[in-house]
Image (cartoon, rainbow, N blue to C red; front, side, top):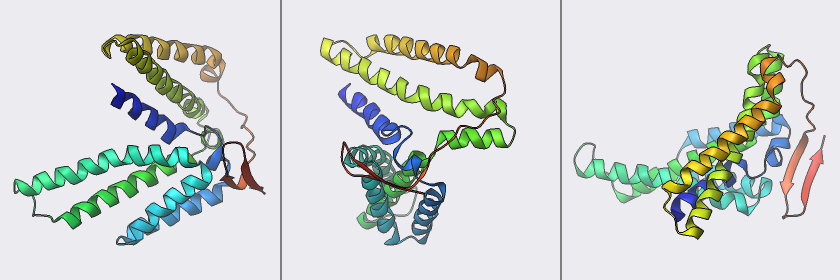
Length: 229
């Protein structure tokens, strides 16, 4: 149970740690440049992959802080270890060509890097910008959906995490806490739906103003350095 709760908490911190702040407030040109640069480094292969991984962690430290890097490392290590082990097993049974330990290490590093890049991409997506884009291209009926998903998902993760913590404190089985967690999630969804009824039933036409900065750097828990346009 503790493993599951830690995994859920890692997902929450890796994907929703800063909410609508951090790199999401950085100017879109900066975010596009970062994304393209990391993809090019990953595509070049070889030791450039290590450079891409180092840059992801460095950007994460500057943009979100150490409390983001550790959960991302844990979260992306799980599929990376799985890919390495499954490749080794397939080579042992003769399904694929034999691989040495160096190749297995590179499989782990490449998977870890790709997972970290994808996680960073997700953290740089500004759902308010996505809403404005959908409104601009006349997809008004769908514009509110990303905002609702962005609000409900972290609440659901934290509700499940808290429910598992209560279960561990009481010494209950994990199955007994699933129903209360789902009940809270459904109730939260209903409340958000009620408060957003007119936006869902209607067609939003106005864009949400965004105050972006050219660079947002995380310094510590209480300070953040921003270079505005």
